[in-house]
Length: 325
Image (cartoon, rainbow, N blue to C red; front, side, top):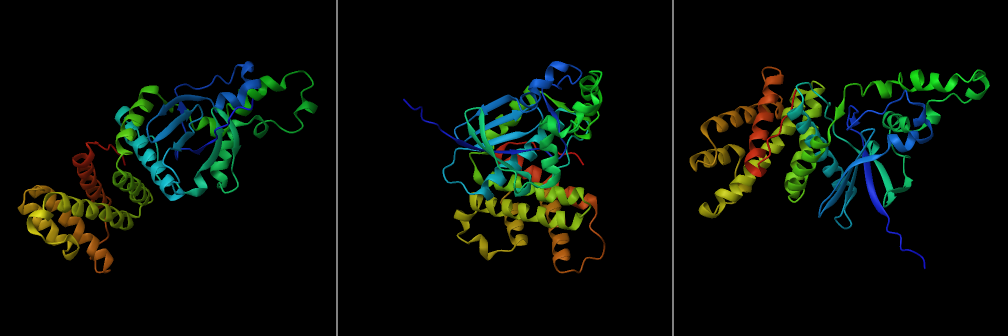
């Protein structure tokens, strides 16, 4: 009898700065050579929810499988970018130093995997950009070993040298030095993700934060602030619909952000301090949009917009987002 094969589609990705999951392999042990690839790609933490499956590999690749039927790839990217921002936040709850440099992940950063249980049936790398593919190839010995190694290994010294120097000194391996993330951290990321994933609006907003943070990291404070304002404005309309709309009978799309702020403050939905901060960001956004700003947008201006977003997220879904800059 032929056993039914159920193939599943996973999407693999690396964080912007790589890490070891749970423990670093011992590259001085010659016994790892025959199982090098399986060791690097080993799934050592995995989770399953009503809506997804999540796997963390030894070399830091994260594998995401969506259980939503016929989900578009653009939505897969939103879930993946949400995972990225949650990884950043949770890591900062554990470490004083900055762990990653958050950036938006796109098609060129993603490895589509076809999987039968734990057996990989296929990986599509045709569209993956070179830097990410180079990181992925660190899983495979042929990308370390010279093609003519057998000609120079006359005294049986090549393999020890390979282990101690060729692999251990490779920049892809050295870049993970001191960057080992624990099982408990992955547990917490999954726990938070399982709460967020039930609310698609929260997923899209968290994914959008990566765009703003990436621009901030690149010194584009004006662009970062504009992107942050889109998120802030979305939350303002969301609060208006939930807290005010029924009582006044006026549609929010007839109102400006300034009018929304005034009403939300009058109804005590927002504090005086928060309204003041939002007004500052709103005015800066308008000056940028109309090209009339008198001075450059500063890092502090953009950080203020991030603090507003973090407060809205905390109120909305109870998530304390911890980001370091």
